[in-house]
Length: 431
Ligand SMILES: [Zn+2]
Image 1 (cartoon, rainbow, N blue to C red):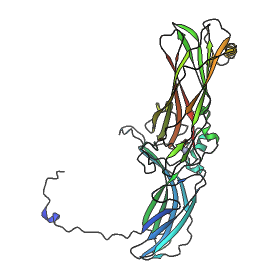
Image 2: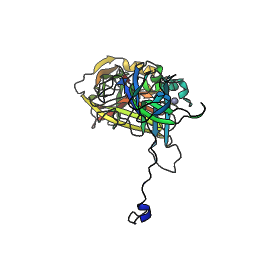
Image 3: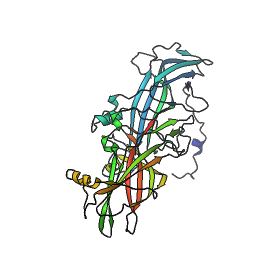
């Protein structure tokens, strides 16, 4: 509609009619221990205690006070293609605990007075299994979904005062709040729905403590990782380079008063083995680059299994992944010295009959010895990176991995070669 047309005078000059404003009581929700805008971080079994303080500017008959601790996850699909089927948004209220208020002392509220309603909630260890009511691949996935997820907000959230913090894409969110609903006194029978006077909430920051369960010990994700590569030069196979990584120690994060999580250090232990097929020297290890991969998986329908990026390629429009990588330190390995061991190659060949993945394609006579060297790759996260714990919930998952890229020089080869290895790492919250 064009905005340049003049408004008819009769309409323009009509006095605006104001509907009588409904009186809304003012509610301030105080959380014990939170002041000056600083958020406390609550963890498993912590008590969230506080008071809802109610004031009115007009005499009001109060019928009911409902104080709840609620946890909700919301997701939206960003692939906004209208003709593609699938849900665009989803919301899951996975936690709702009610403060019992059996009897209100004063139901006739008058101006000038303040009325206090204390509350106390214990952060539960897990949520009801009924909250994960969809089909799952196995009981382990369901158990992971019934663990309490952490507060998970986007970078712009007030919870994360560092610009690099949070790392949640805007398309998904997990939030906790104390909610206070005041209702009028019912004028007729008790079955008549009460009219809501106000609905006020205050957000909370919850970081559940690590729980030693099998849920995160999924064999798909947390095996010791191994990779091997043929070392070739001028068309000849000189041997096999193999690297095995031990499962790294968890990164333990803790919160500061400004809401930033600081992480402990960890390390990846790598064991290299070179099995020559001829009397050749092992490759020269050159450089090891490491990156932290942070993956957020979210969907508008529940996940039935632990999500992986491999699965994403063939799934529908209701599942998405948001993956970021941050370079960590690089290691110069040129001074690493191989240790020569006897007979390792022979033992490998013998075991190759039943495990083809370990078979060694021999193009020459076994020299009867192999070479090994071990390297410790430190994982020091940059200070500004505020992580949340690894978690898997019905709609949202967060995982971490260390991506390693090893460059090495095969003797007499023209170019350097590269071997990549991805090692999942778990982040847990602890105090
Ligand atoms: Zn679930």
